[in-house]
Length: 344
Ligand code: HEM
Ligand SMILES: *[C@@H]1O[C@H](CO)[C@@H](O)[C@H](O)[C@H]1NC(C)=O
Ligand SMILES: *[C@@H]1O[C@H](CO)[C@@H](O)[C@H](O)[C@H]1NC(C)=O
Image 1: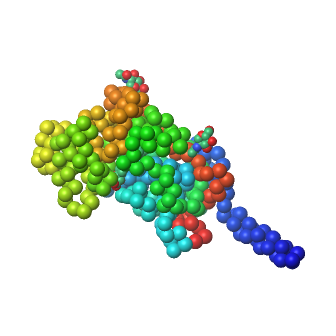
Image 2 (image 1 turned 45 degrees about the horizontal axis):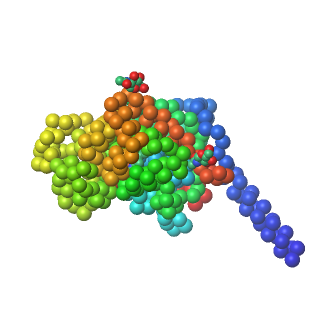
Image 3 (image 1 turned 30 degrees about the vertical axis):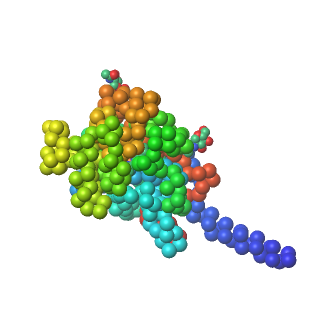
């Protein structure tokens, strides 16, 4: 009996010894966190983000979405990056709510470059945050700019069910959206500010199927026809979130009055989302829902009127997003490869 108990205790102690060096509790986030341990690391991130955006502007939008989908689920801990394995086949990225999530290879490239420069030093979660920072800066021609602190750790837990529970769905009502953001300590105003990210990028037709039969009070019929035509092109095609990025032939056919507003430069990050929203030419139900509540509608109008204000408030909201912590007492590590835990 006693030997059994002490054997068990020994076992537990041995287990702790093995696990303890791998896991630490996150400390305070700091500006200049890697100043001594990996000088120049921010330039490495920026170089790779700029390169990825030059090759494919869509990867910039994907990086801006990635920070949201990482930080809203178990805090900013790179849990969204973990690939499924036999031991954990249902990681966050396999969740239906994460449909279309991309740019994982951009993160991999940055990580590989940083491992070469300063092995085992910069966390994947800090890379996600700074990649989103650089992407939003580049896509806005520098109008969105901020300097987030660093020092995040990479978490070991990644569950599709957590992503389904914590991320907002495009079919949500305004009440559901407000509650979803409030659970993460984000206000109605911040819900409106962050939704402005839908000025860039793409969405699958399955993410706004219901809108194809919404009444004119919710979506401009000509735009609805445009989306319907695009969505008839395959089982679940992607469509640009911002109507001004649409291809001219589709617009000429369904929405000719919009032709003069088309832009050559795609995926420009500005307050155009609020203009589109007030004009009822946005894709997701969750976008339109912002017009259905007094406070949210007030902010939509405010940001439609003042693009500089949005640039600044969006920057602040992304910094706040980047500070969402892991659940209390969580352990983390600095992953060597962003898709896998170190001891797998
Ligand atoms: C308010 C609740 C939100 C809902 C319901 C929502 C929903 C969605 C959906 C359904 C898509 C398209 C996914 C697909 O079909 O492929 C999407 C795309 C996107 N979302 Fe959101 N989103 C929300 C908030 C945000 C926030 C806070 C950000 C970032 C700050 C963001 C950034 C983006 C970006 C950049 C894309 C385009 C991604 C790409 O092109 O790769 N969204 N969102
Ligand atoms: C929200 O704020 C409360 C009160 O300060 C805090 O206890 C809680 O951990 C915060 N939630 C998140 C997700 O940060
Ligand atoms: C727009 O917002 C900026 C930044 O807050 C502010 O300085 C400016 O006065 C505002 N412009 C107008 C026309 O209200």
